[in-house]
Image (cartoon, rainbow, N blue to C red; front, side):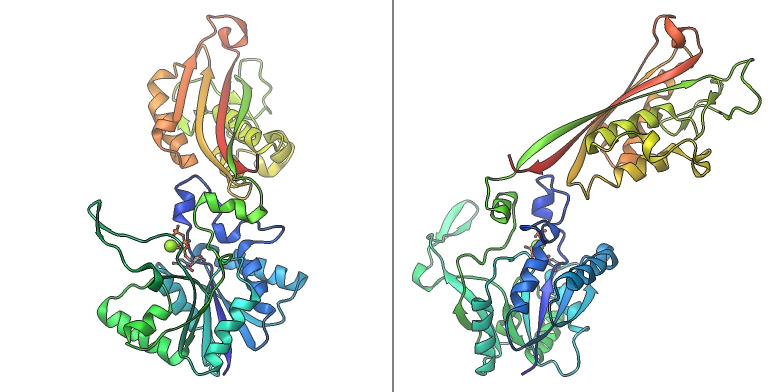
Length: 404
Ligand code: CTP
Ligand code: MG
């Protein structure tokens, strides 16, 4: 028997996402290492497994493959490994992974990367059953609660609890069974949630070995407390504030000063005074970028995009905002709302307000109803009142999930 592990880590974690968590659960931190790597390590401790295929989200395949290489260099799995892009459904990810197996592989252990508390004991039980001749093996634990079959909100049946088991992974399957199972699944349009289910669909016996109560799958935010053994994570809001000023070009502006036609929130404002600025001079997006950096606790745009650097000369401020925004997901933050205020005597911002709002919502990937744009004059007082320049304020609100 030559057995490989297939570690399924290509899911999108939609149940976590629905609760506002932006990092996929399999890539979250589990005591100093990512969840999926903690799973991989358990397999590396079991003798008799030859290699591992990681199924990764298609859009993150390259970046996560680099992470696997880095983790393996730091603390080697001691196994051959390969990475593939996963597919739409769990079984599609599995099918893609099959293509990366070496020719001599005869059996696979298919594991949910999100079950990072799997122990070598459970894995060994599955391997032993395969070695004993079983062609499909699942670990399972007896259910504790009475299970009801419910239809339209009414109990339809109460199956005998003593015969019910909750199924876990790794599921061990011989490759010929798995390949035949996939053919049958394709022919019948079958979707299965477990791998041995493919053997079951072929009418083959699926053997059950003892699983473990601890071998749970991280699925919803409540499960995250298991990762650090602490209290459940709570949503912590962060509010970032930004402020920026641009001077208007005037008769006494030196010829070599960089002046730009006015743009507010990516909307050109025809007929407005020109502004003096190193970048495109979008004062509103500069205030917004600072507000976003405020959420991230990462200083201000001057530090990140210095106006002494020629590469930012005339740069579209939307690029700066996008670059700052890209820092949110890695920091575990989800942007939820922005509120922007333009202060100017001239031009009149009102006619452009909805255009600006739509642009900003699109730029930030926020629904329109979570973006507000306001404008005011300062009653002819101060530098805006004297039409010498324009200023903008922004707040950005984000949530992150943290231990209390
Ligand atoms: N998985 C996968 N490819 C998919 C779907 C799921 O590799 N197309 C993996 C997940 O990464 C996870 C395991 O299969 O390790 C079990 O799936 P599940 O718990 O359902 O994870 P997700 O599909 O990511 O989460 P959700 O169902 O909440 O979207
Ligand atoms: Mg799923």
